[in-house]
Length: 205
Image (cartoon, rainbow, N blue to C red; front, side, top):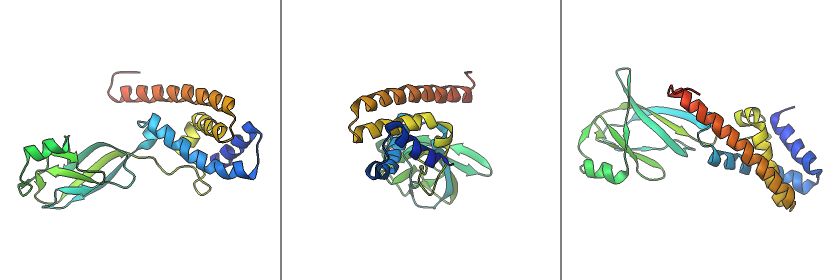
């Protein structure tokens, strides 16, 4: 049995409701629960990824990766050496480098808008880049029956689905109880992630 089918069955069993209307709504509830978890714990390692490519000479902008929600860092690799760029707001970048025709190896970047990054100086040639970012990965569906979130943080996901289920079923007492369960479990996971990041920087658990 897969994580997806377990979650579908658990939601029905907890509420003792296998009506067609409720069962049809559960996939949407799972999606909403995954979105809520991403917003509450965006630093969960499962949400971290990266994308590589090549900057184009004389072009100051770069399209953001599909699905990007939070940019962690951008680096350039030159002669096998990876160098991370400084991040600045767009007004600072434009003030520091007002002439976009001035070209060189980029040292800073900004979020130009919701779809593009901007680099300064404007790349004078092609550069290999890596964008490190966070995104909400493909969630649990009938065609994607296991995920890192569902496998490793099942209780948190289940409680969030049960919370949302209680709201649509108008069982507000159950919804409140499961919301409390979710908040407690998500706090535990957030603390786990915090310890993980602390260890990353060598400051111990």
